[in-house]
Length: 137
Image (cartoon, rainbow, N blue to C red; front, side, top):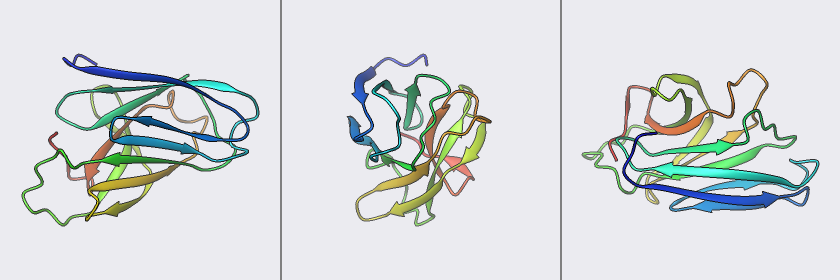
């Protein structure tokens, strides 16, 4: 990511679960999702889209985790189209959409994620507007 401002947060989550909060975004990992304590790094960079990258690469959850991303900083020009979270490449090519629920009033979208072996690393999660365009940050 070649952005001017980068925030990162390392947190160890164990079998009891936990929440990683980074800026206005959060990843909720339920109890039983991880078999052993795992250090997860979350990176948010300023840029044209709201994006969070998680490491280590290839991390898999045994239970569904929930990623919530804010889009309160985006100028939506009154758009009521539902937003979704997508796994993307570094070039912002969409790899896969997460099952997502958009909360228009809170201006945030939550996606359910179970990282599968077919995903190249965990990828980068971006907020998209019904798959038609990425939201400007």
